[in-house]
Length: 210
Image (cartoon, rainbow, N blue to C red; front, side, top):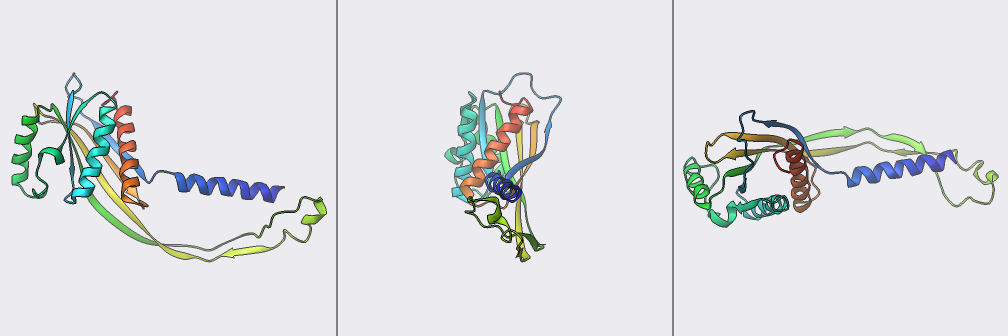
């Protein structure tokens, strides 16, 4: 029985790990001098040059904010994809575009760092169990004593560091900031969804959104 319990616990643990989110907010900051009134219309901008990823990130975040009652403008709908985010003149273009939309807050999400790290996972031993013995306790004798070995291996962890800043348009002051990590994303769409969920949860926790 204890062996069956061991494998049941191990299975639940492995499933929980597999289903766990790859995105986590590691820290956040709320300005003590932020405006007393919450914004009504938010301009959402993802600073990535890949148009597909940019559209996906902005669409996800826009939908999350709309569910909270905000009006939302996505940068990809009003800013040409051809404008590179790294150029100094882009700031002036963005300021002009944001003011034209009538947004009173800007949420900027930017990938600030990528990191790859290779590590060694050591091998391990565990009881070699089989199933199907239900005829009597004696069926287990001489059967559960085996030991299996899982060899060690090398694996590479890919971590993406993202910074998200919310600005007040009128004063151009920082209202809220968060740092987050996306670790070993299985695919781009899932990673974007998980990051959006983690970010909106922290915004709620910090009382930035309802």
